[in-house]
Image (cartoon, rainbow, N blue to C red; front, side, top):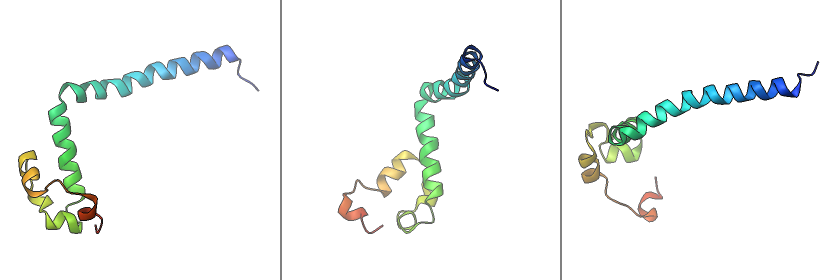
Length: 84
């Protein structure tokens, strides 16, 4: 049995409308407090990589701030990072 096109369009439009709220609200919250969002992401990345060779060598498990990250992990070229 085929669903009439008009009903399908209404269903899709409704789904898109509801999805907009599910996606938009967290996005707006994140951009309104971008510093906290970026710091949370940095901490997540550090935690997930704290047991890698690179993470152990740079003390990822002990890094508490962006400033500390900058001190411990210098800007690197591909040639420096390639072995990892």
